[in-house]
Structure formats: structure tokens, C-alpha cells
Image 1: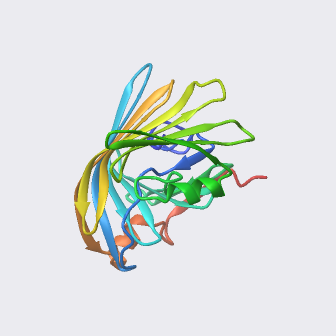
Image 2: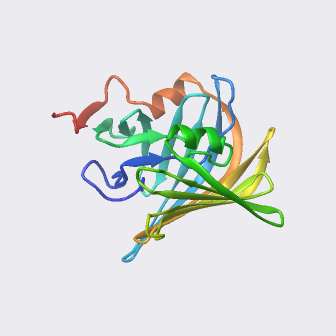
Image 3: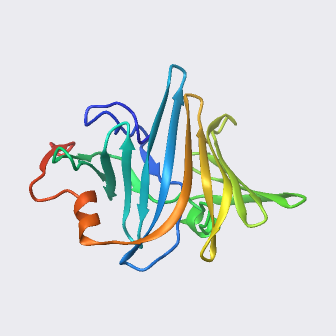
Length: 232
């Protein structure tokens, strides 16, 4: 979860060991960003929280700029998450065992087979039902099973199952929209036994990555930075 209450700020504790940003995007010129407005809804058994803002994605850079309920910018570098508060000139660098990746193995535009093999998974079988097909993969050591469901070329769902067959997490994709030469999902829903997350994207557009935009998104020289998790 990207937006929830925690020690580094009201919206920024990540509880999973591996955090996958489930939307994959176009490869575009380094000086140009594709920008989406987003709404993020997080529901657990007690309450529901909503955040809104923009996602900026360049060729190698990725920023989440939250506008509501407070202004903050989140971006990542390997195992470090940077949470920047541009208006108050404060920032947090959070380092832990979390690994940040920008797509699931074989996400909406990914190469499922090659990515899963690199992660240690073995292909088990493929099933078809009309225009839909499912690919089933298993990890020989952890016995974790992944089931990918496609309709045509669009990924509809990825489900992760335990050795006992319990669903650990399910990621659903929808509302595909043609942008340039790619079909991109404008909705992603993550469901687990404990919580549900919904990401909705809208208003895609291309903007230049200017110096003023970079200075707003990134930690500046006059920003007070507090580090967490670097003590060891």
C-alpha cells in the first residue's frame, strides 16, 4: 500500500516485502513524460482511504505526486523510497528490505514467460476458453502458483496462490485505452484477504520534463532530509 498512515508521514508506509508498481508504460523520450491523473482507494476491514494526484512516467523515472489529502511526492531508487514534501521543504528517505519494481512479472505489457523464468518460476500449463486463455506457473521451491488470465492480448487478472491453493493476492486490470501505439490499463484492483486497493488513471497526456518540474518533484538542496532504515 502506498498511501496509509505511518511513521514517515501520513501516507507512506509500505508493508509488502516486494512492491510492484503494476502499471507498465510506454518507452518515451527522456525529456518527455507521460502524465496520468490518478485516484487511489485503499479499503481494509475497518475503513477506506482515498488519495488523488498525478503519476509522472519517463523512460527511466517514475514519480507519484499526491495532491490530496496532502501534497507529497513519492519516488524510488532500488531499495529506497523517497517521500518529498515540496511545500514544507522536508523529505524522508526510507531504506529497508523492500525491493521496488515497476511491473509485475509479465504485467499488462510485459513478457510473461521470460520474466517469470528469471524469477525462478516454471511453466505448468495453458488453458483456453473462447477468447480467454490462462497461463499457470509454479515456483518449485516455494510452491507459489501464479495464474495469468488474458483476453486477446490484454491481461485481465493475475492471481497468486499458496501451496494449499489459498488466494494470497489477486490483481485485476481493466479499462484499456489506446495511447500512442500501446493499450494501457486505466484501472488496477488489488485484492488480498486483508485489504483491497483500486487505482484509477485518467486524462493521459505528454508533458516536457522541465527543470521547474524536476525541482518540484525531487528533493532540493534546501530540503531537510531525514533518513530511516540506514542505521545498520
